[in-house]
Image (cartoon, rainbow, N blue to C red; front, top):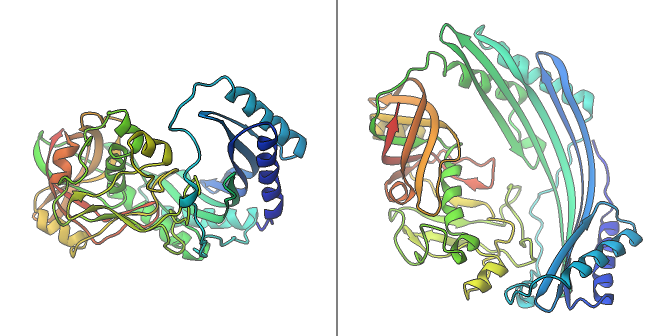
Length: 442
């Protein structure tokens, strides 16, 4: 797959939208234009289950009339269609309520430097090649053990895209990126029933992906080790969140310091700037300019320059996560987080995963969480979970159908260590996290 996308055509579409907005009386406007192509193949039990191509494009424009705003979008990038879309947005804006916090991000904050972050690595792969790779991945899993009895499939996915963001400040930002993944989900059974598990990898560059054989075998081992699961006695135990589960924990933290939650006063971390919310060894920061990383960008969704910055230093909350609208609501300045954080990083300590288990001694290793039982307003946390019982620093047996509960305030302060087994496949980069105690209900 190696489809070329015309960057000039996207820029021309953005320019037309801004010109139309100005002609129709808008005092400010912004536009995002994107085009993406992709291939996704799933093989299940040796047969092709799904084969999907996508070729999408779209334009979304926002116009401002004084303190009123409105948006409209289209997938038709012909000039006449863009003009109609802008006209529709302008018509809506004249009937929307004024909001003195709306508007573009400040012109002085616009990015002016655009380093090459190595985000674009097209994968020259066609459907036939993708089918071979997916089949190899799945078969590698089946070959591990006869107890692997079924499969939910192996998937190969490759996408590339271009996006232009422009606004009436004169800012034009260009993003070109790729994202490739390979995954496998397997099912094993014994006399107690069936268990399923998976493994995957994702990267900007297909050369950085783990091999199909490695992913299939890891999926099989993850599945087999969940067989013969037991229940456990209800109690208060230390808990380790495995590195691929721990990002969800810090996702709750970011949700609690996001601008929208703050100005609505709907977060348990309201007015906590400058306060200790983690142990003093915890350092949480953004690294937006990492090469090839999933969350890298030199500007945010409003064109504001991104920069490496501390969010938590020595356990103390240093900064919120704001876009320009929420910043104005709070009488603050945007932190360049329109669209989210950029490679949120929680520094790991000296302990690897095995050493983390040894230090904990006895407790629960959580490898999967389920449900939506987290209240950002109060910090109350309750999730279904699956994982392993640990004794003497060693995994003893799998456990499932249990619930872990606490309050995020206590969980954050109760972190004993962050492992150096850093998870790098997503936008949050963290190792396994050991928390001193949680209520575990079997």
